[in-house]
Image (cartoon, rainbow, N blue to C red; front, side, top):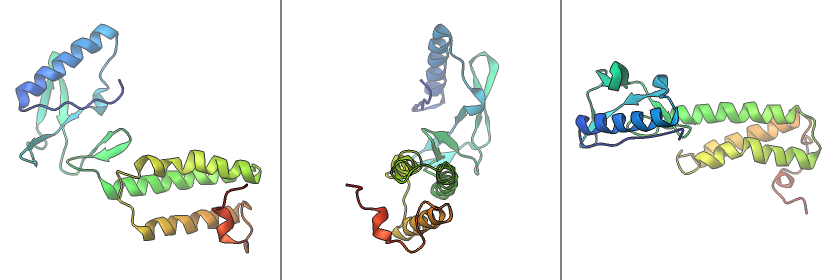
Length: 169
């Protein structure tokens, strides 16, 4: 178990759940990554109790998220909702980083496209249903991808743009 979210009706229920997880974790030799643990208290969909300290069994503190803080769950930044702008910026940066790394590898054309689709584009496939991308944002990223491909000689400057999207068969 790498990611875990606990839900409870009140603080006592959450404390009981944390105690149960701690007991099971001790039994199998796992430890909490306390730097990654945090609590959020919501009442009727509204965040409450920001900034207070919460005690974990054995007097280990789990902090309450501040107003400007978020947590990462399954690779997505959240607080009371998904942090769309943060995730978009992070995904764009990582996508460009991966794309440039693949383009510098000097793969053949077929392997280059396969590597881009497998390693770079997969970032967007993972978050496609979670992050709300506009058509303009995706078109801008597509243009940037083609520009980088041209700069790294993965695409000819005056080649047909449609050839990038057509099956090799």
